[in-house]
Image 1 (cartoon, helix red, strand yellow):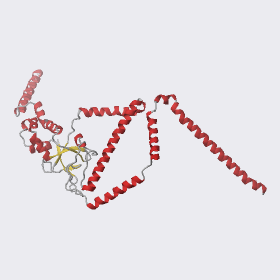
Image 2 (image 1 turned 45 degrees about the vertical axis):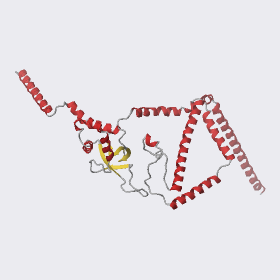
Image 3 (image 1 turned 180 degrees about the horizontal axis):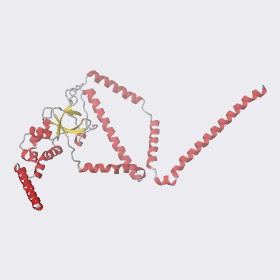
Image 4 (image 1 turned 60 degrees about the vertical axis):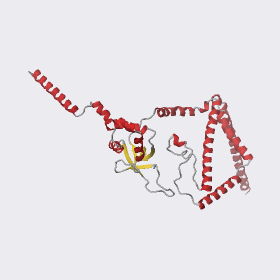
Length: 347
């Protein structure tokens, strides 16, 4: 009797579970896995949009955190030109751009931001197009009127970044092993690094000369390679040659004349105090000696004691000279004491 009652209870529970399952799936034609994929459709859409190169974005600081952000008007133009990305959303692909952006905001995939500096700085004509510091905007709704939106999720790291991060320890170890490299490898590394350093210095000097000449003579700010010293810039922006349109006010004539006089005075001063040929030869010889010590160092000589013997001999010579000086000083003191004692004895 007990087994029959237990079987009846099991049958009732199983039938109730089937009925509840039927009611659960009756409202929608898709199984639970497809519903989960539908929920993640906006996440996939956000990742595709963020990885797309056509959407212009920058990096800024938001509450002491670096974030990637874009402008609202750029987002509207991007989706109008690339409407095929809406197919990722499935049944929501017919939504308007504003509605899609609001969905992303509601799902915390985006956050609306505002510029921290809201006033025009002295010497500027308008606010910065891409501010470097942002703050969270109180009204989290989409707008294409001077509105900024930052991604809140962590983007997937590309494969080349992973390989690059793994190569840093290898590069550090290679730098530490530089003293034991062959002589030809040392020369190759030395001249390559010196060439790159010389190229950078020449580029910065040419930039400064072009800027100074254009600013003094024409009153224009001309910076070739304007983003070469930028902290955050893409590879294409870093090597862009010609600058954008100048947004600052033109310099005054008095300021241009003043800096022209200062530049001429500095040039004459440097020319007057330039080192002569003998001083340049001494400095060149000193630099060559330092480079030769680094290049010609051999670990086999260090292990055999040939290179360590010279410093020890110098130390011995120094110690001997010091002891001699001390003995001479002590002898002089005794002689003075003797001379002072003679009058006392006569007294």
